[in-house]
Length: 100
Image (cartoon, rainbow, N blue to C red; front, side, top):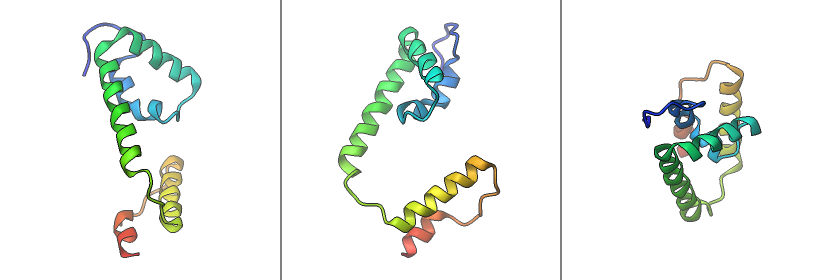
């Protein structure tokens, strides 16, 4: 998606990292670039607003369930592996969680 207008930060970069922005998982300098982009680009602002609304809805409707400690540990371990560039096992972590 692109509005067709030139921006300092390309629409595709903004949309590729939208959830990092929504989850406050990016450096402040990148957040500032995204905020400037949203001021300039109504299609990206609209997509941001939609994703933000969905995130709030999911949190309100599904955010009350406690996550089992072992599942949280497995998921965090998988995230750490991916971030460090390690090879991730082929088996599906959700299959392991369903067996519990």
